[in-house]
Length: 398
Ligand code: NAD
Ligand code: MG
Image 1 (tube, rainbow, N blue to C red):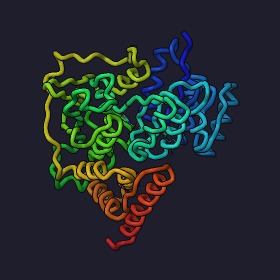
Image 2: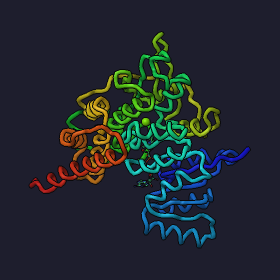
Image 3: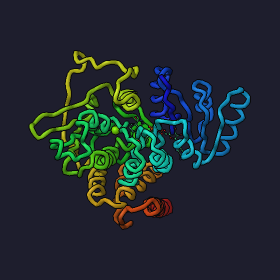
Image 4: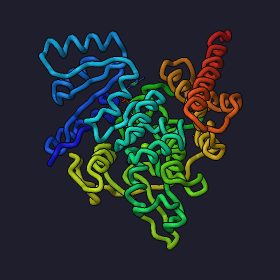
């Protein structure tokens, strides 16, 4: 069997590491053609040594030249490129069949679009790219005959529970509702008055999943579930009316699909991203992922509750953006990225994240998201509006 060429964008991150762990188990099926990272020299160097890709991209130029030195000294054949444009080059590289899109945030949009335009199979972890670009990315996928498979565990679960031809429309295939589950994050039961004082370390200590810092904070605010609501509407061509968010603290059910006859199909498994990664890599086949099977004698209880709108205002903001459409999700996402970074830098309290996003949404007018320029402009406008507000707060006497 010919080995399939894989590019892993964001290989040094949490999803990147899980992807390489799965690929390492299936050396006979896949070969790593390209690895990319922002600035972690040592980690990318070790990955190059283990997987010997044709190309490695280190976006940050000084880190790239340090990496190139290391690679040369070690006598490895990998070509090292730098700069953001090189990400799009490897995403559309001719030897690549599947692209793992696992860069965090808006920085992943252009390479993901490049992969879509080049007709690659895209394994989409980078939800921000889809949320900010909306149907633009999906249209590029359709035009080129590319294929988009969701890696986000909920969307991967929904994909597994939907019939093959769901793209005809959920009504047509008898789906009543998508039940999007979420753990509620580390602050689900914290007294509301304590939210003001939580630290980045507490926000990043997720009870069930080990993830990058940005998505961990999003899980704590439940903006992650809000972004996932928008992601679900786009991927499964539906509206927020057909998606219900269900808080399920154990994170063993990864989401469900309810049919008009009353049947509910769920996908369950360990909270381990190697399952959706292996599913998407091998689809429509199945292969091992290195994940322990669920032991229902040990599982005990599965609990469910409604999300608390007072504790998680981000959910309301994301739902509003989903209903508004156009560049509203772009604005929501950009403001959230700036706000989360400010929280991680301890410039604003946790509760300020959603407030800042709301202020930016009220300030920047959404328009039709008809082309890439419009989307990138809305993204810049929202970031500037968020930074202006942060700068005003920094100069306020305390
Ligand atoms: P992470 O922070 O651990 O890793 C991010 C990766 O992106 C790193 O390799 C980093 O080098 C690279 N990167 C960061 N900024 C970059 C830039 N400006 N240009 C190029 N590369 C850049 O993040 P993660 O947790 O692996 O998440 C990656 C994506 O997958 C996010 O969009 C996240 O929402 C999504 N996701 C993650 C999980 C999870 O379990 N970690 C689950 C579902 C979805
Ligand atoms: Mg998810």
